[in-house]
Image (cartoon, rainbow over all chains, first blue to last red; front, side):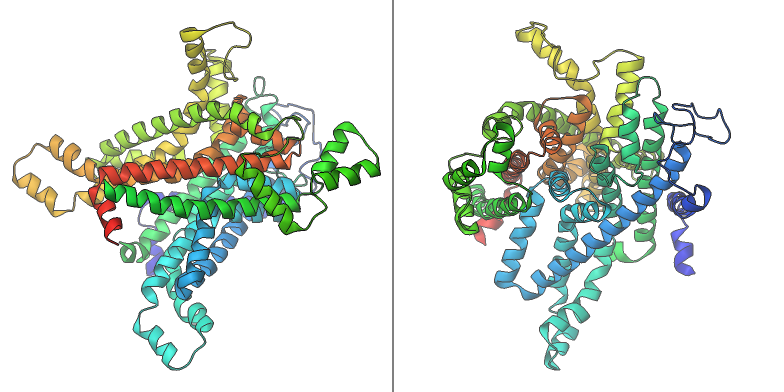
Length: 276
Length: 328
C-alpha cells in the first residue's frame, strides 16, 4: 500500500499508469468488442472517421474497420513487447550471472560475444533473422530479444561481480553448495532488481522495433499490427493521412506510457538509490 | 599520448575478436538460410542437375562446413563479400556505392541530435527542478517514444504534401544536370527531412543524459567552491557543470552509432534515400541473404571504427583515461 502511494506521487507516474491500464483494457476487450477477424472487410473503402457510428474511425483502403484494427493491434504490440523484453531479460540475466560468477575464460568469451551483439545494429540483426527464418509472432519475439539482451547482461555481470565477494556467498561456499546453485539461487536473485529496472526501456524499445519490422512488411501476416497499419496507410498518405497517423499516435502513447510508468516504479522503489 | 596509444592497441586487439565472432555468426545465419549461392545462380540463368553439381563443386559448396567457413574467411580477408543475387554484381561494389549517402545522413543526424540535444540539456540542467526542466524532460521522453519511420511520414505530410516546402523523398532531383554547388544544395534540401526524422529521435537521449549529468554535478563540492569564489552563474553553468556532464555524452556518441545505423534502415526506406539502409530493405525484399549479411558485416566494421575514434577522442579529452589504462 505504502509502495503504491509512493508510486502515485508524481503526475507522470499517474499518467503512465492510466495509459497502460487503458491499453491493457483495449487489448483484453478486443475479441469481445470486435469479435471476428479484424482483417475482414467491414464497410466501404476509405470511409473518413466520425462519419458512420457503426465504424467510428472509418475504414482503410480495403474497407477494414480502423477502430477494430487499433484494438487488435494493441494486443500484438503488448504481447510482442512483453514477451521480447522477458526473453531479453532472461538471456541477459543468465549470461551476465555466468560471466560474472565464473570469471576467467568463460567471462572473457561471454563478454566478447556480448560485444559482438552490441556491434551489429540490433535492428539489422532482427531484420536478417526474421527474413531468414520467416515472419511469425514467435520469430519476431526472438529476433527482438537477440538485439536487446546485451544491456541486461552487462548490468547483471557488474552486479554479480560486486555480490560474489559478500559474506553470505562465502558462507554458501563453505557449506558446500554447488557453484551453479550459488550463482542462480544466492547471487542472481540479489543482482536482479537493478536489471529489472531496465525492463521499461526494453519493453518500449521492443514495441518500437516490432512496429518498425511490421512497417517493413516483416510482421506476422496473420495479425494486425500498428506498424503494418502505418505501412498500409502510407499508400494513401496524400488523400487519407489519418490512416497512418492514428496507429502512430497509438504507438507513441503506448511507448510513452511504458516509459512514464517505468520511471514511476524506479523512483518509488529504492533501486535508484542503491544504483548511485 | 602514450596512454591513448596503449588504449588504441588494446581496443584494436579486442575488436579483431569481436569481428571474428560477428563473421562466424553471420556465416551461421547464411547456412541457416534456405538455398545457397548455386540455387540463386540457377534461378537467374537456368541449368540442369549436372550443371548444379558442377557449380557446387567449383564454388566449394560440397565441402564440409569448416572448410566453407575457412573459405568464407579467406574471401573476406580479400575484401570479397560474394555476389549479390538480386543485383548480379559483387556485393562489395554495391555497398561502397551506397555507403557515402548513409554516412552523410548519419553524420548530419548525429550532429543535429548531439548539438541540439546537449544545448537543450544544458538549458534544462542549468536549473534542475524548474518548470523548463520538467517541460523539456517530459517533452524529450515523448519524442523518444516516437517511432522514427512514423515521424518521417508525419514530416512528409506536413512539409512535403501540405506546405510543399521540401521534396518528398530521394537524394537529389533526378536528371537535373546540376553540378558543383547547385548539386550539393539540391542534396542538402533533400536531406532536411530524413536528417530531422533520424536526428530528432536521438536528440532526447543526449538531452536527458546531459540534464542528468548536470543535476549530478550541481551537488559536487567544486561547484560550491566556484560559487564561493564569486563566479557568475553563467560561467558556473557552462565552464563547470556542463563541462563535467559532457564527457559521458561522447561515449554515448559511439554507443549510439549502431542504433542510428539500424534507424537509418527505416528512415531511408520512408524517404527513398539510396543508402545502406534502403539496400538492406531491398535485400530483404529480394531474399538476398548474402547481400544482407554483407551489409551487417560492413555495419559492424563501421561501428567498431566509430567507437575506436570515440575512445581516442575521449582519451585525448580526458587525460585520466589513457593514464589509467597504461598503468593497468
